[in-house]
Length: 193
Image (spheres, rainbow, N blue to C red):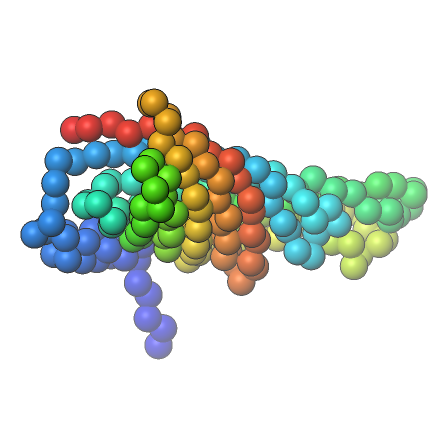
């Protein structure tokens, strides 16, 4: 017998825990939205360095804590030498990775407008891989797909300017048992509710 925990239950549990934990410290609601992008490492791929892009959000709970969310996309496009349909060919070896996660985050003020941040996110992820360099002679390009629980950890430093917030972060994505770190630049904006 296997135990199945739905993503909906996980999300509701995280939101409930955050509400209970921070209910005595809530202040005027601030929502932070950011765009990040950069390079991502794809182990076991022909082309190990790819690109990633992220849309992130934070519900600021107090001076230090926030509830974060991320929508992540990353991709690697590579080729390897092989034989396809009895002809020498460069065979595609591509990977697309996606992640939607939510979770708690912490911001530590370093100086005026400069802060370090850390967050842990869990949710749903998927990977689609096309091609397999272990199969040099193929009649059909092999593909593999995963969909299921995934996670991410983000550590960054950011500076509030007159309007936007800019920064850099390192994100480690865990999807289908694969660890794929990325280095990103970010720009974000705060909205007061």
